[in-house]
Image 1 (cartoon, rainbow, N blue to C red):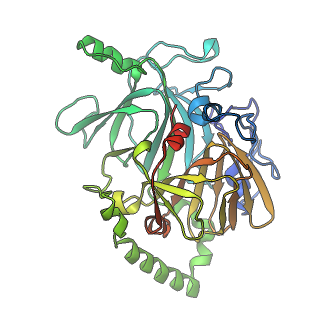
Image 2: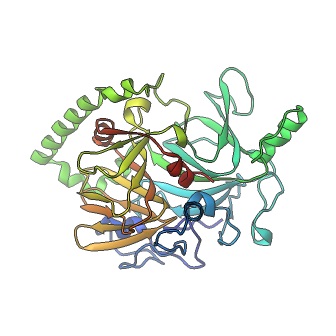
Image 3: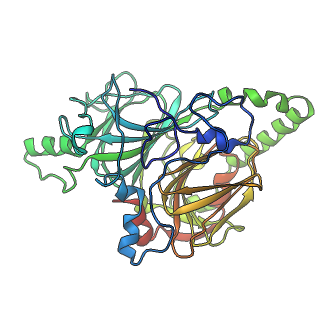
Amino acid sequence: GERLRGGSLASWPSRPAAVPSRELAGLNDGPPAEGERRGQGVPHKFETSSSSSSSEEEGYKNTLAHRVLDGDVAHHWLKHARTGRLVQPILLQSRRSGSPFGVELELVQGPGTRVFGPRAPEAASQVVERIERDNYHVYYVLSGSGRLKTALGDRRASDGGSSSSAVELQSGDIFALAPRVRYSIESGAIVAQAAAEEGERANAAAGTPLAMLSITVPVSLTDYRIARAEVNQGVAGAGKAKKEEQEEEEESVLPAQIKFRNQEAESCLLSSRLRHAAELLTFQLPNNSKNRIAPVFDPFRDCTPFTCSIEILEPLGVIPRHQHDEAYELFIILSGCVDLYLNGTRKISGKLGDTLLVKPRNDHELINPDTGEKVYMLSIILPNETFAKQVWNGNYSGRLRNADVNHLVD
C-alpha cells in the first residue's frame, strides 16, 4: 500500500497530512514536501472531551487501549503487499522528515477474518516471520491477545527448538525486539486454534484481534545528525566529546534503586524482552514531584541506547521547560490531552492518539490543562543522555496503581 505520513493514531485522513516531526522540530529542513503545510499542528485526533469524566468507568473508555477497536472509530488499514500485515502508518522513519522513529498502529487477526466490516482488508493467510536489521522494535499491546515467537541466529522463529522461545501476549504488555532477531506475532485466534487441537482451554480474549502500537527505534542516529555536523567541530566538538565521555562513565554505574527494588535483568536485551504494565515501578523527579515516570526499557537493565517509559501527568501537571543536546523525544498520548509549548512561543495541543516528536536543542514544556483527568503517555528518548539515571535516582512512588493500569489496558 501507499506509505502515508501523519500524526494521529485515531483516524487516517483521505488527504496527505502535515508531518509533525518537521512541524515540532523548530528547524528549517527546507521547503515542505507535497501535502505538507507549515503552521499546522497535529491534524487528526479522537473527538474526546478534555473535561473530567462523570465516573471512573467512563474515564477508562476514553483511552487508546479501549478506543482502538471501537466500531465507532474509523480506521483506515493498509495491507502490506509482502507480509499481509494490517497497519495504519502514523509517523514515517525518514531522514527527509527528520524523524528517527517510525510509528504504526498494527492489527493482527486470525486468517480470513474481518472485524471492521467490508472496508477492512483480510488478514494474511499465514503467520509471516519478521526481522529488523538496524533497528530495535518496541511493541505496546493495546488490546487483545496473541503470542510472540523469537529465534536466534539463522533458525526460523516457527521452527522451535532450544534457540527459539514463545511468550503469550495480553493487553498492557510492552515488549522489545533487538536488531537481527527473527520473530513472528500470532493472533489470539491462531493460538486458540492450536490450543483446541491439543485439547487445552482457550484464553477468554482469544477471539479478539491483537491491536498494537509498533515503534521503530534506530540503533544509531548517524543518519539524522548530518545537518548538525558543523556544530560538533572545533572547540565545541571537543567539549561535546568530553561531555559524552562523562555521561558514558556515569551510565556504567548502576543506580542503587535498580538493585534495591529487585529490577536487575540477567543480561542485555539480545533477543526479546517483555514487561507487564501492572508490574512497572514509578518514580518522581525532584523538579516534577506530582508526575510519575515508569521506566520500561533503559540502558541500565537492557543495554539499549534509548529509554522507553510510561509518563503520567497529574491534573494541571507540568513537565518543566528543558531541552536535550542530542536526543530526540517521542510522546504518544494514550489517555487525556496535553499542551506542548515549543521554544517558549508555540503551543501545540495533543489529545488521545496523537504522536508528538521534539528534535534536539529545542526548548519544550508539556502541561496537562485538565483539572480532573490525568495524562498517560508512552515516551521514547534517543539517545538516553542522562534521563534513565535521573528517573532511577528519583523518589520511588510505588508500582502503577490499579487506576493507572485500567488506563493502559483494554
